[in-house]
Image (tube, rainbow, N blue to C red):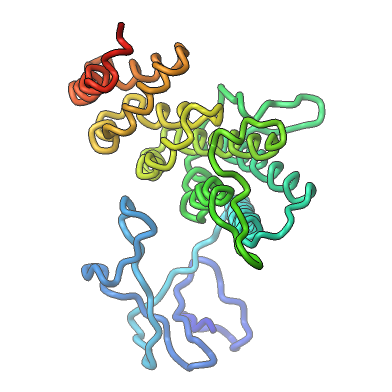
Length: 313
């Protein structure tokens, strides 16, 4: 219940926008209060890199001097928030379906694939129409929408994307032993798994677009590099996403790129003889036009390692 600080004609009168109110929880007759932000225990962190949200609590007493502001919200922001919440819920339900061991029908796969496409158009601001079909995997010229990028992270959509990428490889519930849908990322390139290959490509494209020009999302993805590394080299757009996060980001390069990540790229260069992986390695060596000595040293140690020096011949 709203208890306005300014006088109103009756209890049923409309509380005006931009006014100050106190909140009462009717069932418990308690009042909402903010907590001391100076105490770390009163802060909630959705990730390691967040500043922290101040917690609120309910107490049986009312403090007249403490009030909350009722600020207007633009209708477009409400629609964006609803979309992000609905997307997170739908992805969570699909992940739970995979884990349950139940049959996954074509309609659900199709709707989830379309949801990923809609999320890509949402974060890039692309207006889709029936006359011009824009490939969601090849969007190049777009202005990053910071508020929507932030929404996808804060409302849990990006976290659900990573859960979606993990689910097919996890044991499923059911009567007796139910094997995972897939045993390894390489199976995604088999014709029978084409629908899941498409999902992974769309999900990595969404992650890539969500981090463009936005530091907090870049840090969020950098924390998942160990997971992303497992998908490099299987045509899932994982390597494109990883290098996009690190491009011209010296602090992220220093903090998050480790020996296993470099070894994976070197292994792909050796096994595939594919120029793009060599390009990705070269991109890691240079940041903002200057050499990154740490990454160069990691690459040299990896290439000149006794285990693989025979491949240099």
